[in-house]
Length: 546
Ligand SMILES: [Zn+2]
Image 1 (cartoon, helix red, strand yellow):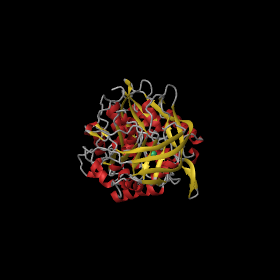
Image 2 (image 1 turned 90 degrees about the vertical axis):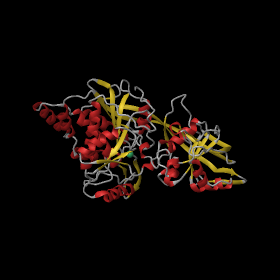
Image 3 (image 1 turned 120 degrees about the vertical axis):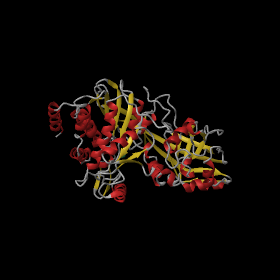
Image 4 (image 1 turned 180 degrees about the vertical axis):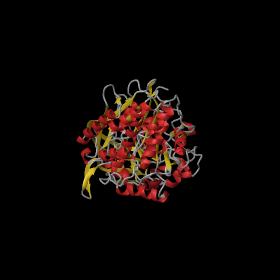
């Protein structure tokens, strides 16, 4: 189907004289609902076996993507290979016996995972904490741009840091404190783990709170039970804490009460810049054993080299991995991931095809990137960002998508991480042409911007956009759209029911892809370098080659 369309497009290009603009509009039309549907149907087919890393489903998935990249006119990104190997280590942690806390004059026994959800990301076969002092460190944040340092004046070296989830902006309602209700990266558990490791803490425990976390305690509880998959640490790199995890709200309250403190009061106090952490007079003792399994999975990527400055690139990304074959639900055991993340891969491939259909090759390069192991913590994209391909290190922008809902044409384009970069201003212009508007993610407190594959690019300073129609159906309005999203989340998300269904409507994703294509096209055919907005956590990071 693709070849026919391409040659038809080529024939048209011969009979029409192409101005840049004309060729752009024609290229945008190669993005079609029918092709998006066909990609999604295929990628969500049982023959892909749920696209799980390290399985036969991986082979089928990455080979299909490589073949399709070649079909739409892309070249291998990694020398002559479409694949980048991502070395990973799976750590299985077993907590031996109870976790004992001495607090005030009480001895408390905590059960893992019901009271405390812990793992060990360290490469030690056994981990032992023996009456290690707890240190309360507020939100566990060092943010120079806000003049904020929760670790000032406290020594956590070799101790157990205990911190609050999210950031102070959420709890004060003060929109000028951090970013108010919008979670900054400092609010994410991943950041808190990293900062505690930098401070030399032996362990880090986050006090769970549902609103601040964006999910209830059952999520960290469940994830502490399954083995953790980590990127292989480069030798000589910074060591993670020996123990990382969460305290349930109840367990935290008990521990601090026994020492004479009230968590709610501590949280209120910790929202002030002058607040300083302290040792509440409590200690933790526990034993864990770790076992390791090394494995590797593949990132897939192709490039359409720029005609003038091929070293300058934009990245269009969508993770290929999902959960494979697992627990049977309603007679189905294949976790097909048609929406997570088949529709987004379709979106990326269609944008790529639009670029390669242009008669005049853009000055800059376009990279289509399908990372692995997103579901395990953005491992493929993090590895890529840390190991950029030779001669293509100057990344100008990243456009990513994850879980595009095929529910028809939308009036909105929801920007997750609203206010981060100028890319959204460019998107707003493209949106108006489609009679649409851009809007912030209605739940910025959940920190979704830090939870998909554009984020490792943001962390190295590459302005990154995560945007799609989501909230305002042209035909049925906002309430209906919210219901559809909720229905997906409860009935299909991370379940075998995330299949392709013929009644899916791809007209909205077509418009989403065309809008992003327009923004991306403006960047690759110019020398524009969209910037981070002032106040972004990433504004002061420079991408490696800038
Ligand atoms: Zn996903």
